[in-house]
Structure formats: structure tokens, C-alpha cells
Image (cartoon, rainbow, N blue to C red; front, side, top):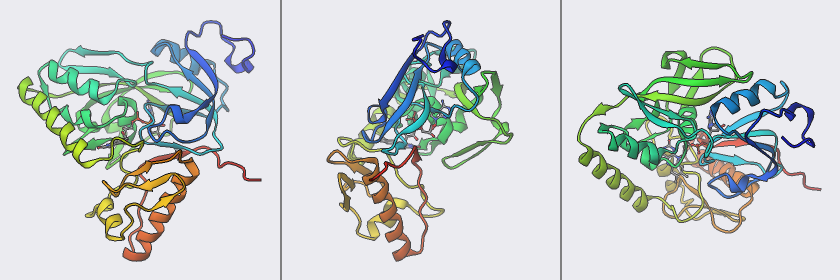
Length: 307
Ligand SMILES: Cc1cc2nc3c(=O)[nH]c(=O)nc-3n(C[C@H](O)[C@H](O)[C@H](O)COP(=O)(O)OP(=O)(O)OC[C@H]3O[C@@H](n4cnc5c(N)ncnc54)[C@H](O)[C@@H]3O)c2cc1C
């Protein structure tokens, strides 16, 4: 570890990589946003545990996977980003379950499950995030949701204690997951359960789901998937479209012409452009329909100081 680090980071036993002032545009699918003051990419689970055991209690921490549901404001994140993607990547069979670590991407998990004759993991292929992000968001699509498949999860507490938890210890809903007890924790892995079945059918299903995505989503432009949660009994995309907001712009951010619940970065959008557009869409939908949209994407960090 580099001796110019603040004292809380000096720990010769750490094997991961610490970086400073990292543009989060490189680590978020919107390709926009401010810097992370520090970013730690652990070498493996034991290294992350060691890191957490030595980090100062007051240091703000956030886990980031593939940043496919995340906007970091232009003033940046003051604290340390724990980068899971490319770090916690173990993926293996464990009895009748699949054990995957938090950094494993959805597509890899779906293909591994199909190759091992499991069915019902296909939907993961369409979610361009990591297992950690999918657990945090209860990500899902086409009738499948992450937590339907969870047998148990593995977490690290803020102080670096490794624990195994059952789904009953969480409040789980539509794009919502909260630990019932009060504890700051990060998902580091999970044991997932699937039905066994026909590999050929699962593979075909993966291909069909990918084709459907390509046809309906603006995947050629940087985006973060659905910006707003669907209100009960309604669809955010339909509401936005009914207000004629497709194509609406703020700076380099635009409501996608292809899918109204996507905001695309068409010309070097700032996080501020994106956030302002989110606010404008929300206000217009409220004005016209009386429905209050809530964001699915997570927004963190500080606003840029305009002098
Ligand atoms: C083109 C596109 C299509 C999408 N389609 C879908 C879809 O069909 N269904 C759907 O549900 N989502 C969809 N998404 C959104 C996104 O992929 C999911 O929310 C995904 O679960 C985010 O994973 P991530 O690793 O990128 O998380 P990040 O964006 O990195 O983080 C998201 C949140 O999870 C937290 N988090 C991340 N890792 C951990 C961890 N290890 N422990 C604790 N908290 C953690 C972060 O702190 C943050 O609050 C889509 C996104 C895109 C860009």
C-alpha cells in the first residue's frame, strides 16, 4: 500500500488496488458524473474483509458493481467506492445451489446456470449489472426477480464481519430490499437455487430475451435502464409517453425516442443534465396525470459548485 494514503488506509497486508479521483463516468453505464474521491478494488473476499476491518469508521463507503443503475453527481462522491466488478468473481456449483460472488455479471450467471442444466436463471442475461447490484435492487424482468432465486446471501458488515443471512431477514419487494435489522452491510455473495431442466430450452430462452431487449431498448446509447419505478397498476414508460415527452432534452441528456422510461446520454451529458431531465419528466407527469413517479436509479454524491 502506498505510504501517501491517509493513515486509515495504511495496511501493508492489503492486496487490492486503491485509486484516487476516479471519474465515475468510467464506472457507470450512463458514462456521466463526477469523481469518486477514492476507489478500492479488492483482490478477493478476504482482502475486502481485511480492508473493512481497517477502514476508519467515519469514512463513507458505497459498493458499486457495473454502475448500471447509478448516477454520481458532478461534484463527486466524498468517500470510498468499493468496486465489486472484476474483484469478487467466484462462480461455482455448491451442492444443489450455485454460489456466485457479488461481482459476477448477470449474463455470466445466466450462461453458467444453463450450462449446468438449471432453468429459470435466463432473465439475468438481460440485466447488465452484477449479482451484488441485483441483490441490492431485487432486479428482475420478464417475470423473474433476483430474490425469488436466493437460498441465502453472504454479507460483510461495515466492520468486516462475514455473515450468512436468509431471505427472511430482509424486506423484499419490487425493486426494494432492506435488511430488517439495523446494520450497514455489503453483499459479497449468494447461494442461488434453480429448477433443473432442458439446457437447450434455457439457451433458446436466453437468445429470445436478448433479441427482445435489442428490439425495445436504446442499447446503442449510454443509459441506466428504467429511470422510474412502475407505479402500482401502471407503467412509467406509458405515462411518460402519454405526456409526449419522448425526445425531450436537457443538455446532452434525452428521453429516449425508443423507450420512454430510458434517459440516454446523447452528447456528453453531465449528471446535472440527467438529474434535471429526471425532475422535469417527473414534474410534467405529475402535472398531467397526478401520478408521482419515483426513481429506480440511485443518485449519490454532491452537486457541483457553480460559482
Ligand atoms: C440497458 C439496461 C437494462 C436494464 N434492465 C433492467 C431490468 O430489466 N431489470 C432491472 O431490475 N434492472 C435493469 N437495469 C438496471 C440495472 O442493471 C440493475 O438495477 C442492476 O441490478 C444494477 O447492478 P449493478 O451491479 O450495475 O449495480 P450498481 O448500479 O453498481 O449499483 C446499484 C445500487 O446497488 C448497490 N450495490 C451494488 N453492489 C452492491 C453490493 N455488492 N452490496 C450492496 N449494495 C450494492 C449500489 O450501492 C447502488 O445503490 C438495466 C440497466 C440497463 C443499463
